[in-house]
Length: 365
Ligand SMILES: *Cc1c(COP(=O)(O)O)cnc(C)c1O
Image 1: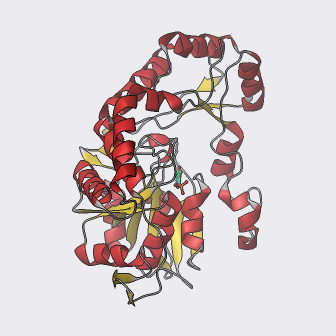
Image 2: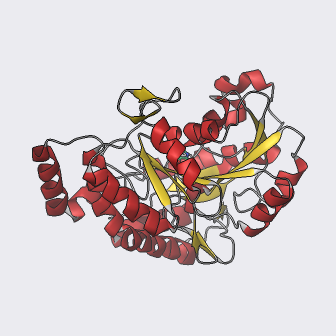
């Protein structure tokens, strides 16, 4: 039995007829950009998250960098971000000339108010919170702290479509929630896509203008913008997937529950979700001191795993200019050396789940 790390075709297969019909309708409509599919998806997604507005964009990275641009955060400003994140969030900050200031994660892989406060200076303008692996960061204290210091909050929800804290969804706590619809995400497109969600109507207008060459009215350009649009085909197909998102997240939760209840190998540490959170298990990340040996052992038994992420952003070549060497973020670096993402996706069968569990429990030093 082969257990691959991801299998995206199963998502298409689960509702094949519906996706094919929608794709054919859009292809024959003659309207491929900025049409009714985009408008329908934006309103459905805003309603799902619980915000007033949603703006479809071309990718998650675009959602992040355009957000910092529109918030007016750039040269001379600092943004606090957790060290253990996907590098896109850090690039969203630095593309605008602002400086990413790395904070260490807690035992739940999350940023905390206490840790953020240590890094606040007179230059701090915002905090970027990543709900990593689909595990929700509790937001109450962070929101209070940011109010006190007058800081913007941006949420990177690229791994957390549908996750919630005290009944409120990821993306609805900060000034702007940024989403990616990269195919592997919980709400994935059949290509690239992204969006922001927000409540502020004047910021919303700015996103609408900025994504389309800074133009509200054709050939009247009020600002230097960009081309970042979620096309009709992706928006239409995402609309179908959104209807099944809760169901698909529940399937992920059931698999996570089975891992929690049955993985007993003391060499592994299982993830620890925060209380009062609903987590959507974008990844199920275990920690193991002998991580590389564990990964090789699983591969020898035909089970594929992925490391999210082997090189933390501050140690990547791209951010060498920040001058942060090895040892500057010990917790973040410890995670990079020990984390392993188990196969957990829609369509992973019960025998496959059992196989993963049995094999993990057989691993020894
Ligand atoms: C996937 C991802 C992004 C970037 O999304 P793209 O659509 O690939 O640009 C940003 N942040 C996190 C946490 C992600 O997982």
